Length: 145
Image (tube, rainbow, N blue to C red; front, side, top):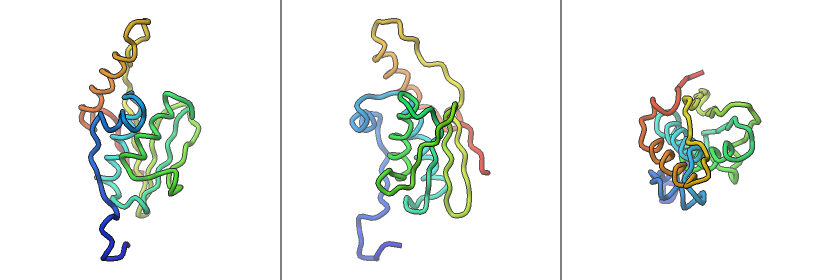
């Protein structure tokens, strides 16, 4: 618990799609999925970014590893605090632990646009914006373990 005179502790922020792109360099589906899963964990599971831990299961390489940037922004789990880790896995999933409980969030299957050689980045950005605006239940499955 922070000192009662500490005013800059455990602050939350709802990031926009533009904020995600500014942090990450562009807007793609994996930063959006990570952000939304991290935000869900923070809002519905454990709101203390010092008690919450995140294990991000993914290939460990872009574009899947971009989910880690989103999880950091959404959950407050950061590389600097050492309460986030990448777990090499053939599928994407985020496992959050806190207060003696475990929350597992798994993205629902989706089909990103194909690279046709023309305006692919714009198509990815549009697709990511669509994901950003979906409800949690349409983005990922939620399981308490």
